[in-house]
Amino acid sequence: MNKTLVVGNYADSVFVADIAHHLGQKENYQDLIALKTFHNSEFCPRYIFGDREDKNMIGRRLEGQKVLIVSTSSPRMNRNELAMHNLLIARAARENGAERVSLLEPDLFFSAQDRGPRPEYGQTLFTRDSVDYEKFDGQPFSAKLYADLLREAGVNQVFTVHNHSPFSLRMLYQEHFDGMFVDLRPVDLYADYLKSSDIVNLDDLIICAPDKGAHEFATQLAEQFTEKPVGYLRMSKERRGEREVIVQPATCSPLQLGDIEGKDIVVVDDMVRTGRTILETCKVIRKAKPRKIIFLVTHFYSSREGRALLDDPVIDEIVTTNTIPAILNRDEQGRLRHKMVVLRISRWIAHNLFMNLQPESGGLKMPHFVEDISSKNPRWKGKYGAHH
Image (tube, rainbow, N blue to C red; front, side, top):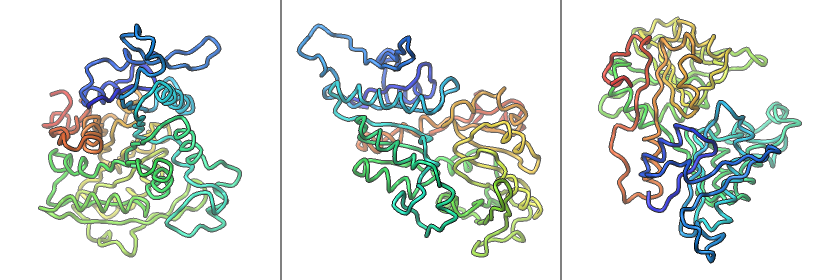
């Protein structure tokens, strides 16, 4: 991408290297910035310039450059540390003359705290009540603080992928960054995968939203199947305490349980942590005797509890992405390897960056993903396996 310097917030990140490669950066991002940590543990990044002879350019060597900071989670550092890295890397770019500083954070940090304990702390599509306010009582409105800090550090633009709070975060970040906030929605990516792989029978496909929060995205995905329309099942859930949920088809759902026998059900969500809600949803669906249940989720937090719950045979296959890069560590996934597929989506992200920042380029040619699949998965010899 013209005059855009791609850097990362920690060393040896394959994800950052992939993004830089797809954007056409020939230099290794680790040769463009030194990610120093002093003996007192303080972080101090420093951009590396090939020619330092011109003393008139001190403090202005990034003039005319656009900087893209690529930020993902790391197995070696927590998200709080990485967030501070982002702030200092952005400030270093700004104070050395960068024309624009963009942040690509596929799994946007602090998104879950998208509102606070008072009416003025966050916008929602629903009318908040005392129960909702109490959920955040005593907590900070962290999403706003992070947006405040990014803006103060010099970030002009933020890209993320399939955010958990699409309305409240969109309103917050659009305001903070003057409309320069893009939540990339992978509906085209998932539709392409479902159509081009052998994971489902398109003649008997049903897209399922596990709750009202997933409804918008699941509907958008279903609408991608124009040549051969698919069915749509909308579930509703009611929380009973911290860990108990009651799941059943929503009364407004186009399909009910009696319509799904022998069908392939794809349950779609943006993120999973413990997997409890998804497991309960799939158990309800399984009673209606579908042929296959697939859980498709963008951000997979690989917790011990989540791995144990999702290993339940009620779920036939799990499809996720590498927005959280640790998911590619198959040893860490343990028994889930036999039914897990990871879509490497750095090319899809790079394509969307081109289309947003340099639309005249036309983006990147398809395919926009690579299917990473273990040999323990029964489909591993399929057409799109990573071993090819």
